[in-house]
Amino acid sequence: MSIFAPYLRIYFLIMSCILNIETSTDVCSVAISDSGQVIFNQEDHTGPNHAVKLGVFVDEALDFLDSHGLPLEAVAVRVPIPDCVSV
Image (cartoon, rainbow, N blue to C red; front, top):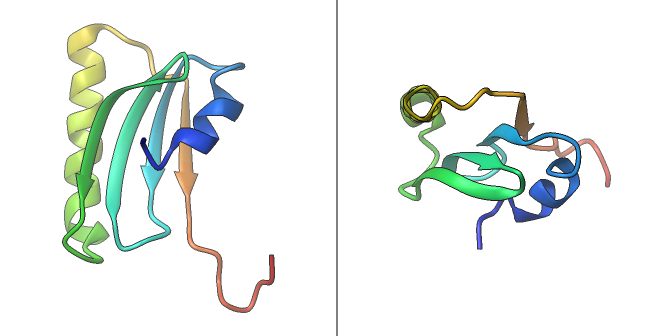
């Protein structure tokens, strides 16, 4: 199961093609969902290296969209919650 699954349930009812970016953990990941289904996914589990991998993963995701003729309708970014904020 993708780490984006909880968010996809919310967004797929409204939008069909979403670029999902995960930045809140040590895992760097980018996915594209279309109508709630993940159709592209890149993940790196080697540690906090978002500065190195994130741009590459986003470029690959956008190339995937272009090559399949899909329009990007939204971008969803999960960011870390600062320690000073209680949930």
